[in-house]
Amino acid sequence: MTPNLRSTLTLLTRRRPGFVVTPKGRTGDGRHRARAPRLLVGVLGLNLVAALWYVATLLGRTPTAYPVPWAVHMSFAWLIVNVGFLCIALARIRTMRFAPERRSSVRFEAAYAGSIDEQPAEVRDLSLTGARLLVAAGPGVPAEVAVGIEVADQVLTLRALVRSVRRRPDGRLDVGLEFADGQDRERARLALALFRTHVLPAGEEDTDTTARVAA
Image 1: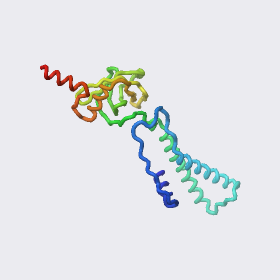
Image 2: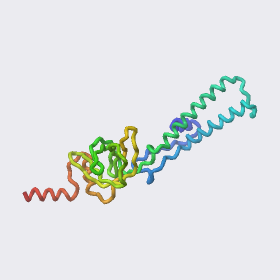
Image 3: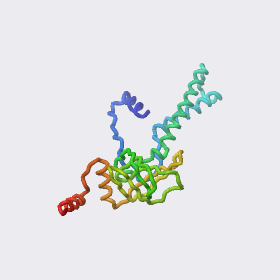
Image 4: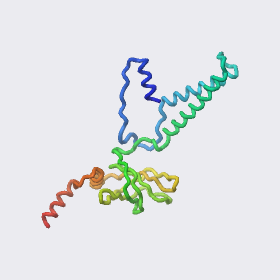
């Protein structure tokens, strides 16, 4: 709806429309619901005003007269449908699923095996600052965990803070994690694994070379 309205407004003004790049990475510092777009809220308000005017006209409280009542009734029925769609759209935007992105790096869709405190888990998406895993049904997870990720023929273990826990309809837990600070070497290994490179992190290559020379 927003792109359609903006493109229509170009017919009424000579102003060149601006181009807004979709934000990538972290767009918020807290876990809170997204704000409803003002355009949708305004359109919803106009629909409600029109509905009140319609009812007031039927009660004879306005100077308006409807010479063809059935056409107006059909328009009101469509208005109700439109309000329903607007409410569904606003409810979807306000869900926690579309809350601001808290990760500062790009996410990779993943299907790796993993673990949370040695409990088997499935890694669903992964970035250099966090991950989302599915674990078997249970009472819950602690606030700080050790997460293992099997990627590129190696198991990486990182300390992580639990930021969200959602129970799916099948009973499994959808756990959102933020990797703890001070794990630069582990993050380097993770970055190299995600980009499918066999280069060793800085500091380890020299050690490996020294070991081969000594042998």
